[in-house]
Length: 87
Image (tube, rainbow, N blue to C red):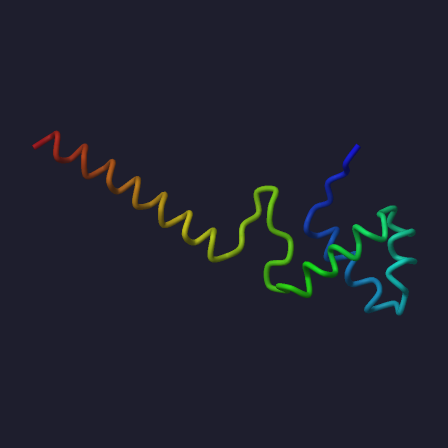
């Protein structure tokens, strides 16, 4: 069974080695996650610390902004079409 971890849990897991001087192996064991999983989180955090854990409904800020603009554009087009039919 694959477990899902939320963003806050992952960030907490990344903080432990830095704050407590523990190794990633110790932290992984204490939290009940595999070393490979923890090292993957560390790698993703190093790649982009502003938005490290995308996926599972989470988007990078620029992708979210684009999606929101596309949604707004679609809504405005629909409103415009309704208004054209009325006149």
